[in-house]
Amino acid sequence: MVEIRFEDLEFLIVTQLVDSSDLKIRGHEIDIHESIEEDPKIVEEELKVVERERETPAGFIDVFGRDSEGNYVVIEVKRNPDYNTVLQLQRYVDEIEDEFSLNVRGILVAPKMTDKVLDYLEERGLEFVGVEMEDVIASYETIDNSQKGLSDFNPDYEVD
Image (tube, rainbow, N blue to C red; front, side):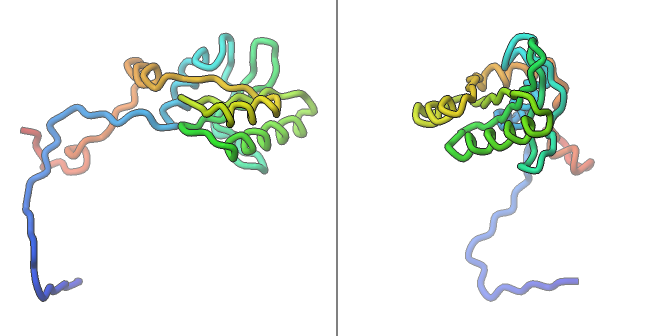
């Protein structure tokens, strides 16, 4: 047992937590990953997802796939890509090219990108696909991705 004593109590609030809404928090990178897996056309027509979180010596590839011509495609997803994101994608592409001795396409998928980062990406022969977060969020109408509420953690909790 742990006992905690306070010399002075300056402020105290006692309240009951209320979870009366159907609030769903969306718009994270994982949401984009799942949307691509469910509907690869978000990135490119006829893209086939082969694997998510493919491990390489350089790290984990977010989405690994093949395009309509059979080329391997490495997809890196970021909400706010920067120069390091481009370098990370380049390392993944290099790893897959070394593994299969083939040319590999690298695609950075993000809601937005600065012109400077886009130039840096294109200088390396990599591609950018912009996604609208509203489209990603709307795709959850068809994906079973329920979020837990307070009552899921405390069976005695009742929503008023």
